[in-house]
Image (cartoon, rainbow, N blue to C red):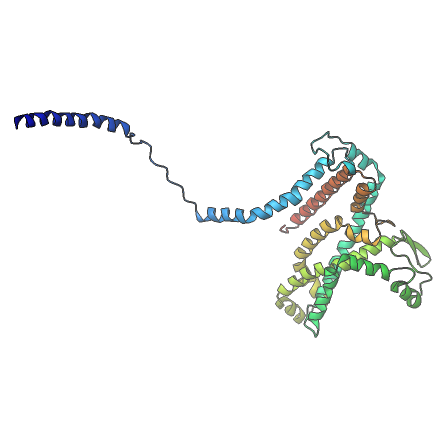
Length: 352
């Protein structure tokens, strides 16, 4: 009994010794507590969440705009400073040897200045006609009358019709041999001979014995532009007229003001901001117009605007560098024109 107890006593001492030896090892194995506080994730505010959601929603459109607009624009600017022919367009290095020779060719050629002058005339005449026709159409259908909805819908036909179809109709109507316009002019208006509206660069108008030169083809394409795009101005102006209050007009009529005075002093001042926006938009689009003139005259008979000139440089002369250089020049001119317009409108106190 004593031996068993004495035998167990050392064994117990060993166990205690073992446990004592393991305690420091376990304490050494456990990592010391960190002195730095744990980082807490910052919560986004509602405005930041909305901004992030908006960026995600805009990202597909942004990618498309960059791929379709920004990258080709940058590539066109780079090509303007290189000697590139159309046959080399697939293998050209956009960051190749840069030169200013393309701009020298563009500025030294008189065709550029002639096409720019034609473009300015075409743009100014077209914008004026579009706004005038749209304003007249909006005033005509402003008051209710029977069939007004049908008339409004009919006004939109030139704008929604395919450009190829409407240009073909105009070419048939203005044909000097069998066109209805020349037939009516000769049989009713007494024209001595048919007028080649789309192939005559300059005609003469006999007025009181004076021979006045008339740019026939250019005036014809300007008239086509005014007819085709006046529904765009019509929609803008009609929407503004619908929003006007009738009380000032009724008060003016009670005071004895006539229709012209009412329009000049009451309606017109309220239409100026809308007409200003229309003028800017139509100037940008008409300055770059190509398809209407190309389908009507092909740029012949004094109607070669700058866009048609660029097309000729690209397809006939196969000079991609010169065409890109002329495009850059047109873009700079358009920016300067819009900056001048913006400055003038701000001096008048208009918000743009």
